[in-house]
Amino acid sequence: MLSRIGSLSTGRASRTRRLQAVLSDQGGSDMKLVWLFDEFLKDTVNLNKTRIDLLEASIPALKSFVRDSDWKPKVRTFEEQGSWAHQTIIRPVDNGEFDADLLVMVDPVEGWSADEYVESLGRVFAASKTYEDKVKTWDYCVTITYAGDRKIDLAPCVVGRRWDGSMEVCNRKGSFEQTAPVDYTAWMKERNTYSGNNSFRKVTRLVKYLRDIKETFTCPSVLLTTLLGNQIQWLDKGSDAFADVPTTLKTVMGRLDNWLQMHPTRPPVTNPKLSTEDFSPLFGTDDQYSNFRTVISRYRKWIDEAHATEGRQESIKAWQKVFGTEFAKGDVVKAAADSISENTEQSLVSRFLDSTAAHLNGIVDMVRDYGISILPPSFARPPHMQTPRWRSIPQPVDIAVSAEWRPTSSAQSARTVAAGQALRAQGGLYFRASLVGGTPVPPEYYVEWRITNTGAVAMSARAGRGGFEVSNKADGRWEELAYRGIHMAEAFVVRRSDDVLVGVSKPFYVVIE
Image 1: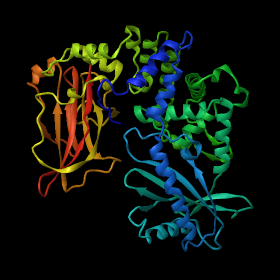
Image 2 (image 1 turned 180 degrees about the vertical axis):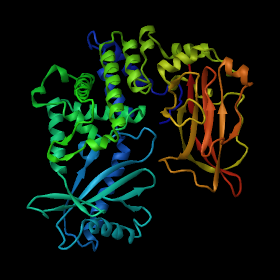
Image 3 (image 1 turned 120 degrees about the vertical axis):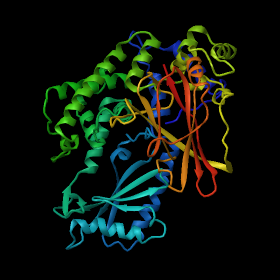
């Protein structure tokens, strides 16, 4: 998830709309920022339309391939499953692959064991020139991977083997396992109807985003969706407790925390449409359940505080404590108070900038509050930054950079950090480069890093660091967080055989408070 730098004119129309929203916000004493939640979902959390379109464009070809193949089972139909079917699929926070589940509903084949359904489907795809380099067979499904962007899992589901209408997924280890995917999806849609305004789906996406961006707890999506859905009942329909998205989030997380606190040890979490299926083993170990219980309680407290906080700027900061600086990242809160015009914006930013990149510390505060987009294009190319020394292909491919914060370079504990996220001057970041979609850089290429610092303290201490560095870890680079400022890390991928530059990343902005 890379921040983009642009001119002050970029997105001005959008900021004008935000300003109008500021002036017309009728949120009451609790600054719920409903409009900003909608924007956060649209711009950051939801899987973008382009990728949805790519997913949906792939499905008809897969269906036709299976139907037209010599696969022995008779195909009845196909059913969407999981987050895709529930409309709770979210954008991967690391810009990596997303996946979707498709059940292949088939009649039973006399004499077949469970493993034959999965393995034979895998062989059919592997024998195809179209899919032979995209297919992998797992315990329950066959996965088709498209260029590191998306994965589609096709899982055979046998209908009517045990009794008329029974449904069973197939485990390659030899067992048929009863399932109720259609009924579960209907249950999930029913919860969404009770909450109103599509708010249950939106809240589920928000909590999944919280799980993925914080990485402080683990909880697979089917378990998480069930836990959240269990907190909504038919009596809630039309209730003030579900008046809007932030209020629904507060209500559902509060109820979930209350339920978890009543269960010090891991409780059963049954499929609401299949009482014999217990999702609770997905919690993992007892320690993982205990951690989940503790973390949900912490986030419940933060959400309650944010929902009750008065004052728009204070409320935004409180919600950013929950969701990080991507929430309301482009909001012009202070601009509204100062009636900022285009010239005034430029004046405020330029007040802190210096042609040597030894800018005043106030620019860090502005970026923390307004986002990276307020910086002029020239910020990304300060005078002391070195130019690449390699010959280059005409259009280098895009390279993705991800970062983990660690207390020391050798520490095993880590948490993902987003570009532009405000950090303290402690510990350090472990940067990794990959192809967009998450595929590792192939071994016939090497990566060098351009590490550039800015800010008066950093420029003085490191004499304008802006050159190229080799990887100092097995697959990336470690950098300590030491100097207040807005710094940049960029990855350059070079072909070993002829030292030609073939890939370049956008700047990964590191904001140190």
